[in-house]
Length: 228
Image (tube, rainbow, N blue to C red; front, side, top):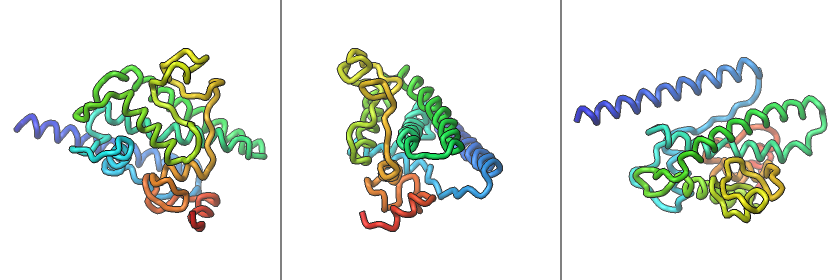
């Protein structure tokens, strides 16, 4: 009983620290980019749990909790950064001003670094079982990538940590710490594809997922007004 209470206390403390860190990050953004519209985000455990259930195509008991332990947290982190990375790559050719291109380059550099660190840490645990679901880290990341490809509704623009050698670099490598196409270049996604993924339902006009009230900005609002 004492052990259960201790684990519960540790879990609650970890969540409190995560919320505090998120608030600090939001405040830093607000101070840096004044007036920038920031939509409501759903980073709750239940939302991440639903995403993992969709990826595995089954109900999980207990539901996946990203804040339960370090491994779960890393897996949850795997879900988000790469989507933004592909969005930046896709947006680059459409930008005209040097200032916009400079901003995007800076964002892409940081996002790429985040994704590389997350994938590296998970790759080191590729064969470890994600308890209590009897699935390895490599298998789960692959299912998350498959889900993102499905929601985006386009060709393969997402890959897990382990892939068939013929799909890897030079058609020889199965380790996939850094995802890329057959030329080892980053995949790209359109704004519509990004919205379809982050909303969690495969539609750019139906809010949900990480953006329960919809994303902000001219492009996102335009899609919300359409009937897709």
